[in-house]
Image (cartoon, rainbow, N blue to C red):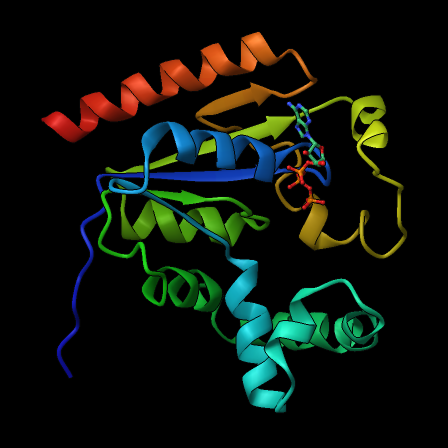
Amino acid sequence: MIMVMANPRVILVFSGKRKSGKDYVTDMLQELLGDSVSHIMKLSAPLKKQYAIEHNLDFERLLDTTEYKEKVRVDMIAWGERKRDEDSAYFCRLSTETSPGFHKPVWIISDARRKTDIKYFKETYPSATMTVRVTADIATRENRGYVFTRNVDDAASECDLDGESFDLVIDNNGDSAKLAATLQSLKQSISSKLTV
Ligand SMILES: Nc1ncnc2c1ncn2[C@@H]1O[C@H](COP(=O)(O)OP(=O)(O)OP(=O)(O)O)[C@@H](O)[C@H]1O
């Protein structure tokens, strides 16, 4: 089998607590960088897709927040844990290698949750990988709809990266001018890596 290797120049591995604004911030950054160079990749998307394939379920229905999703959620989480136990890089490989952005120079991973997610990118693409943490106060997150949920917010998938250090921490408490300035400066530093 011939493996086609990707050569991303910059991989931004984003993480953050629920409702910290990971999607918001990564969407903004991707818009700033543009489609020709950058692509958002979600580690959680292929999990759902692969689970649906292996269990013969409807992928589209699984993606929206219907009762259907709630019913299979518990089993899907357990299935994901088993897959990850067997091979901690399974979902990182699957989500990047099946992404339409695989050959683009900038990858924006929007939802790293585990130390093993970060380890995978740092080991596989050492010179390209940069970790970014999005933070917001609990009050801000609550205003955005966050409600502490037992077995979710105290589970490994939400807490494994607490206390880690990151290359960049983005404060996302709602100061839009400050956020725009931070993302502009991140864009500059990414652009400089693309031109060398
Ligand atoms: N800086 C911001 N200014 C205005 N609204 C924001 C900002 N950041 C996030 N939001 C809003 O807060 C809500 C939650 O943000 P988002 O979905 O990006 O969080 P998340 O960290 O991806 O959450 P989850 O982990 O639950 O998927 C969204 O409605 C988003 O539009």
